[in-house]
Image (tube, rainbow, N blue to C red; front, side, top):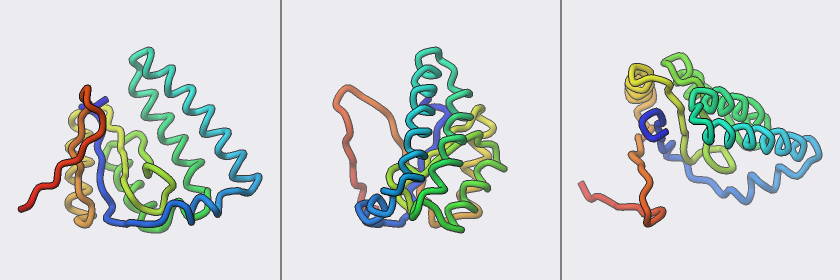
Length: 145
């Protein structure tokens, strides 16, 4: 997972509460149920070590989530499609949407390099975020350059 996944900070900060308040309609609730079912399939993929299917399901997840109010915009859609064209098989905005972080799944090292290069060249406002997991949980380090 860690070797096949890229995270990028969009530089866009927003109040997730405002976005989530727009997402109370019955249509959105139905979309969230569909996403929950995709999440169950994703868990099965992880348990079976089938990460490429995870990537495909991530794309399905995004195709539903992007329909929710406040989740996407023209720029987010452009970034997502550029990542797909460069080799990602799935991705999403992490959290409520509208900004924050992109996650892209790349099935091969070649695809990962291609997506990274595409994001750097075409969307210089994105900042790649290096990540890993350890026994201590979530921590952030600020580097002064």
